[in-house]
Image (cartoon, rainbow, N blue to C red; front, side):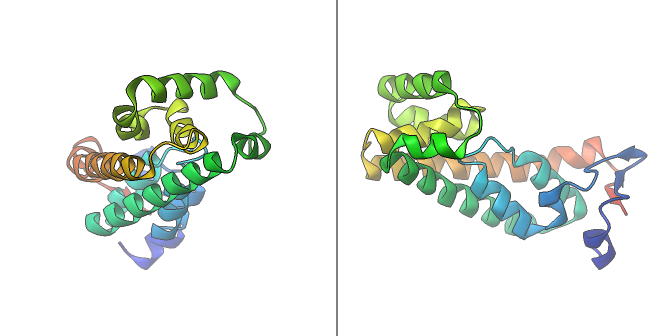
Length: 177
């Protein structure tokens, strides 16, 4: 990665296809990835675009993995404590309340427990509520920690390492500032 490529995302393209048209998190680099991964545990903001952009930019796969997983795990703990402090707090944070997602998350947690916590990082929108519901129901914190940490690590491996294998096949010329 060159210094210029980090600063000039407006003109960034992959081959001849405009790509990442100056997204906020990619523009901030690894710090942006940490913020993105932290927020994505509470608010449905996918980390895959930021991770892909940084991989294509040539950032270290290990650094991306560590930052992505650290932010995601910390975000999962924050989500648990938001729930622990009352799910009403989350409703005040969100502009559009989603009672259906909360109810679905609650029933999934009751039915599947540890397993649903482990796969929650892969479930769009409803998966963001599951750690919050775990906190609201005072789910065993030790089991929560094991499930969330292992789930976030597995997802991080899949995104970073499989992404680093697949992205060059899709975009062989990488990113060009």
